[in-house]
Length: 211
Image (tube, rainbow, N blue to C red; front, top):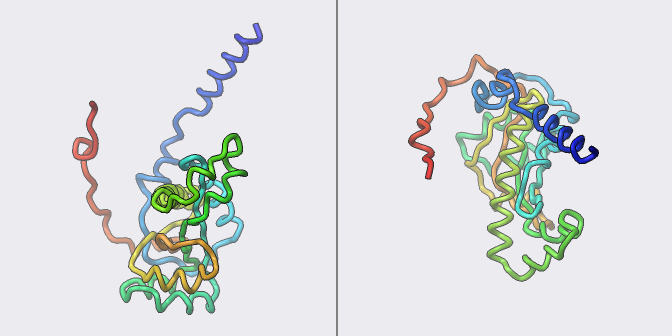
């Protein structure tokens, strides 16, 4: 009887976890946009913390969790970031309430005794530089994507972008660490009136097939 109840409870939990509603899908995907211009409104730190707390729950290889972020919001920090930006990205980044430098930790494996404690996962990586780099980039980019969705989920808008000098950003913001920058995300409350028309997307058949 106990086993039957446990099975029933599990099936009920699966049902409760079912598809999210259309409004949530709109906020995360269908109506969400990449913003270049933001309203002059401060971003509460608690929303940024909540977005990180959500993003960290997504899967990574062996729970490596290499995502590392610096939130640039002060005038002093913006002045340090500006010279590293491509010309076309300067105005929109300087006017954004917050810019996240999204990076990954090349020494992520040192935290595996905490994150993957049931086996000696750290030994898989030590001395294997190619494996370290591929895992850090792959799982770090996965987490960065979760982070963008998490920002949308807590009611913020995001403008992810490249177009900057990674080495200069690393020297300025990650000096003395094992972190490397991946891309930037401007964050705030987007100005919908300044949006460009949405660009086309590929059809299902152009993206995927069944084998």
